[in-house]
Image (cartoon, rainbow over all chains, first blue to last red; front, side, top):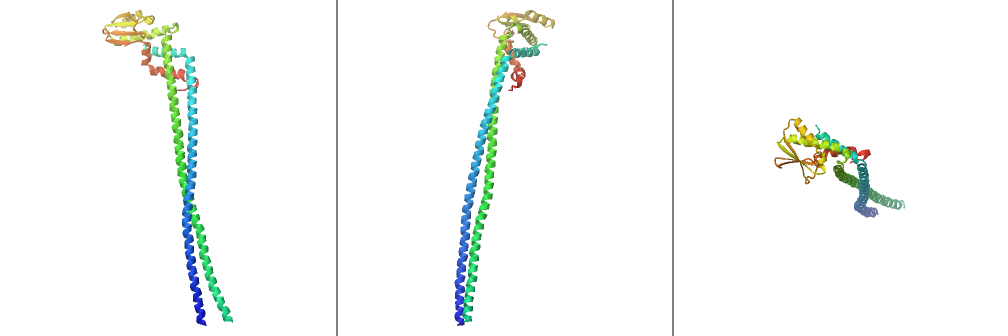
Length: 111
Length: 214
């Protein structure tokens, strides 16, 4: 009777140990899956964030191009205004210009 | 009877212990699963932030360059456009000067300039004979008597003659050594000689007047 009891216990122990081994394998598999899944998530996050970063970069460049066009036009407009002022000044100051040339030449040649 | 109960209890206890252990192993693995995923998520976020920062910083740098390049291009074009206009204005002023210098209001000064220019040139040439050529238009500017007088006053012995020549394009030409030596005494030539100074003065006093700027 005692022998049978002992055998039953050993049998149960063996069965359970084998189940523990299975559980350990399952646990290992879970961790392995986690690594695989984790790497995939890693790549996805990097790809998504980098894409967002590139989009932000594109917007920054586009904004710079837009601003630079505005600046270009502003500077050229200013130049146009200066050209107008120059033409106006020349038109209104012909006599003064002649005087300047005459005085300069006289100062240059007169003893 | 007691023995049987105790045996069953023993078996249950053993089984229970193993079941607990199994549950612990799986629960721990599941917990690790979440931790591993979280580790990858955190690492990915950190790495992505680094990458994104690099990309954005590079974009900002390029944006700055784009803006700077365009501004420089605009400033250069603007300067060039203004310089072209200024040059055109200068040429127009010179042309107008050459027309108007014969007007009564400028005539005395024009004569004086030409007198000094011719006199100083003669003095520099220091030759025995000289011919001063002029055309119909410019003859009113040539002060023959004063030139001779001034040469005499300064002890310059020079045989001076005057000749009308319609081929003279400017105001006067001094010829010496049988035409081998020729000095253009036109106002245009005088202006060319002092072009930088005249441009500077015109720029300061006329082109840039009232806040205009070249």
